[in-house]
Length: 219
Image 1 (cartoon, rainbow, N blue to C red):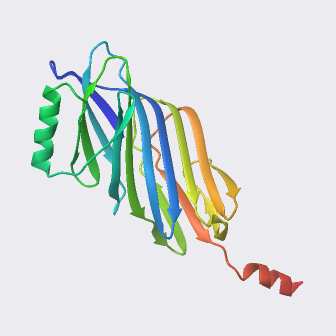
Image 2 (cartoon, helix red, strand yellow):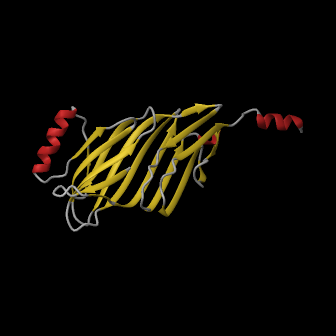
C-alpha cells in the first residue's frame, strides 16, 4: 500500500519514505493467506496524520490489521463504522495512536493513522485470505503491488506452497528463486532500491503423475 503523510494544521500531503515492503504468503488447499508488512519513515520535523491505501484481490477477506505503537505490536478490532470514527476522533484528541480502516471503492481500502511522530518509523501489517484463481489446469496467485513514485529501500517476497512438490511452479512477473522444503516449496524474491508496481504472480500446475510411468514403459 501507500502511506501519505498529512500535516493536520495545513492539510499538506506527501508520500512517506518506504523503507521495507515484505510479502509473506502461505498457499494450501486452493487458498492463500497473505501478510503485507510495510515500514514507512516520516522524515519531517513534525508529527503527521497518515492515510494508508491498499488494494486487495477479488474475493479476498481481511483477517488481520496491526501496527507497532511505541515498540509494542497492537492488534485491531472490528466495530461499526460510525462507532469506529467516534473512537478514532476521541483517541486523536488524547494524542494516542489509533488507526481507522474503511472500505473505499472496488477492492481498495483506506486506513487513517495518527500520530506519525517526526523522524520515526511506522510499521503496518495487513493480512487477508483469498481463493486461488483456477484456469486451464493451473492455480494462480496474484498479490496486488501498487505503483509508488519512490523506490522501496528493500522489497522481499516469500511464498510457501504446502505440498508444492506436486506442482510445476513459475512466476511470469518476477525472477524468483524456488527451493525445496521437504514436500513443500518456497518461492522467494528480494531486491534493494526496488521500483514497485508489478503485481506478484505465481503460477502452479499440478504434475502429471503418469508422465514418469509412461517414460519407464517406453524404455
